[in-house]
Image (cartoon, rainbow, N blue to C red; front, side, top):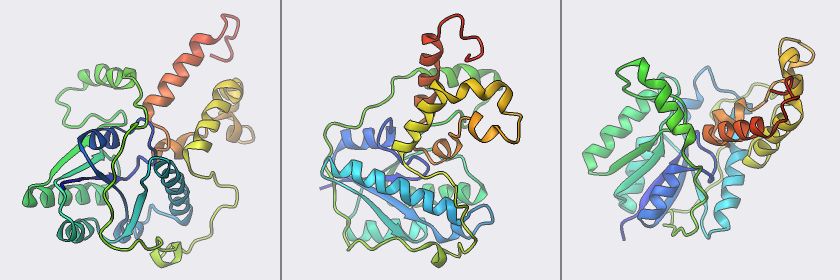
Length: 261
């Protein structure tokens, strides 16, 4: 039976996940995250990034288990993994979110596009941030951004059918095996949507009161800022969720709450 691959990248969640929603509506899905050694060899990666992603993936795994599925974590270069998977259990569609990364991820995505064309696999990408690809005129950006941010957030698909990985799952490599040997900050933020939601709510309800003056203070900035950057960067929360929650909170504030605004 034909099935679709949902390629998780910087969208480590199941809520408001357009790729998962579209693929699940189409038929059976195989949820896949690929640990790509070439990307982790880049100078802009570190041990804490990798461990943050693994924490996010554990939460995605638990969320999918509630629906009878799982996310499979496979190590290898992207097109090599797709070739192995397609040879063992042919799929006819690949779903993912657009990624705004570095040149390595850009060239990787171009290689994936060539791979899909050569094998007749439909590749559908969905926007999730404010970047608009192939925009002809900057004057069009604001309206498109507002349109994206205003769309209703997608719920977790109520019904999902899952295709199996055609080989035995193996644990993801440890950080040292990827060359990530630098020390990890002991107070780094931990990954996952649960902590992301708590951080967002804490900022909107409490810590945003400190933002106006605290953001420029070396002592107060760590608590006065939103601390949402890693959760947005790795997609624990969608941009749309954050924008809509922020705007809803502003509407609820009384007129006297000028500092909170």
